[in-house]
Amino acid sequence: MSSPMQHGTFSWVELMTSDLKGAEAFYGKLFGWAFKDGPINGMEYRIVAAGDQDVGGLMALPENLKQAPPSWGAYVTVDDVDETSRQAESLGGKVLMQPHDIPTVGRMAVIQDPQGAVISAISYAKCD
Image (cartoon, rainbow, N blue to C red; front, side, top):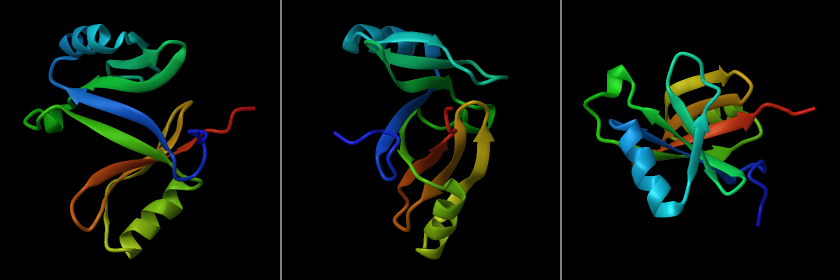
């Protein structure tokens, strides 16, 4: 199995939901997941743990997306999220959320392929 920190590997999943507590109850019972507060300031974010491994996150739908249905999103690790965003555009895709820093985590962007599918790219902060 590849390391989730290797370029091109799926490394994180995230649920944006209209009912954070309901999602915790459902997925906790369904998969045995545990939850803890996440590191994102200014929003309620819950880290999903499967055993001792953090595998994803849950967050409430942001105000500007309240009309969107709840959905899961996937993150792919990349060496350089800025370069990946430029490359996506050069290949006919769109950058829906420009590269930006997430304190203590890394740098991420949301891209859309030419067919309309959306995925997030992330470069993790280097741990010393």
